[in-house]
Image (cartoon, rainbow, N blue to C red; front, side):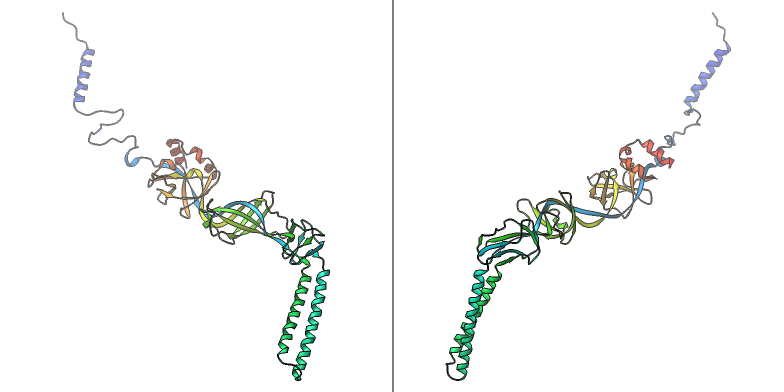
Length: 389
């Protein structure tokens, strides 16, 4: 039975044969593009090879500046000197001219002893001196006239010298019945009482010299090399008082148990308002150092674990620089080791490497405050922000 051949069947067979022959020819068509030469590498949407877009980072220029530094020392206040003023002769105390807490100056009377016995000793010594002087003069006259041996004069001269020394001793003992302050200070206990027989060497009064007042503390062996005599210090007392002083003493040997060195700071205290025995904290001002104040988020670690930051040079290439931390604060850090003028990457530094060329956008102060939180945003966002700049 024969089937009629329609025109549509002939067209379908023709198209099928044409497609088959075309595919056997080895060329293809890609939607809207011309033939692809198999000998020429394809470009993946312009993102491979030398046409890849540069990574965008944000950077800010930082200038080196002086950073004041200080070393903190905790300790206590003490008087510069504590003097127990003792009697230098025996006697009954007839007057105590001061009381506890009295501020005295050098030469002020503290105590008086009974003078009666000392005055009698002075009169007796002076009488003996007068008699020795008369005997000596008479002997000298007789010897000159030939009525006495010349060898008698030296013996009488010696007696005269001894009598003169006795007078000086008696007068000195009389002076010592008045006990005076050898230094400026504040009267403290122990303090004698009227009526007590004070023997030589026993205490009349105790004086504390609180000008200057000392702040005594300890500095570790690691930090002691930073200190020098005369360095200024700011002192805060637990009482709320504040004062300024200077480093006056640095121990030459460390404490064998604590490995710390004693350091004394002298504080002027002419009015005596600052007290001894008070807990204090001293901030010893060290020489200023040159450094850069950077956001804390800019710090990085290299492959060897060294701390540093990434800079952008004049060719817009990344340079990793090692730094030394001077001190850190809440959200910032002082570092040393950078060029005086440094363009630091503050956003995107974690996505670039040393030597890489980048696109640089300038960062402002507001961005620096949030750079820690935004430093991990996707690359596409960074690129878009950089392009927008």
